[in-house]
Image (cartoon, rainbow, N blue to C red; front, side):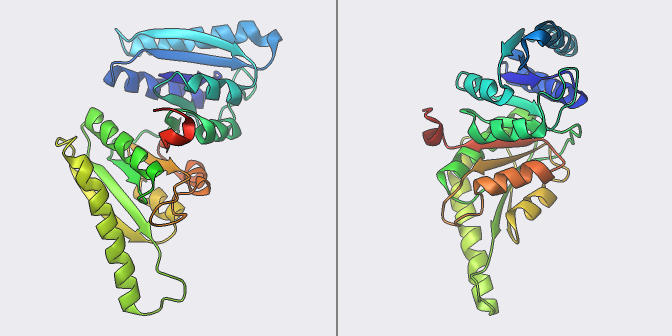
Length: 267
């Protein structure tokens, strides 16, 4: 697992979250400071070292490695993601490295990484894992990651499918049909996952509205909100890249963005 840090308060929060996750998943943690300016190399090494020490102190026994890279932060994090199980970044940073991990960087990493990316806010509620689904391959990858995370943390899973009635659909019958279709799709997707994680209690939620607004509201007290990237499944466009990015900007809890392995080249 890799966490990108720049010394800011929010990157420290991301490191704390990543250390806890690495400990739960029995994975080594790499604390990475990416430095765009060679003159700041000493500062980058100091930042990685201090935050790495913090992670070791809070999680004794956790294997932690400090790393520094020279170059564009988003580019380097995306490159390293090809070798990582998970990349963690803060939602916005303005630390000793002069804002190296700004929100725009975390957005770029979430949109292009080869592995799941978690963008961490300072708020870490101890609620359920919430996952948005839309029956696309990207959504199925997100669902698998959400089940795994809920199992590791010992919390419930809320699987939410946001639906919209067809344009011009004014009758109650059409709305009822759209809701029934969403509920059926949701149940079918969950059926194949429940057996893999019998320890996870699942709540199914089919709700009408805009995906960003509904997922953000549903995950207000969530431990983690999980979304797929560029979903184009049975409910077209509900979890497109723009929705995933919208959730990143508006959710108050940590957000995991999971891309379909076929789009990242991983198998």
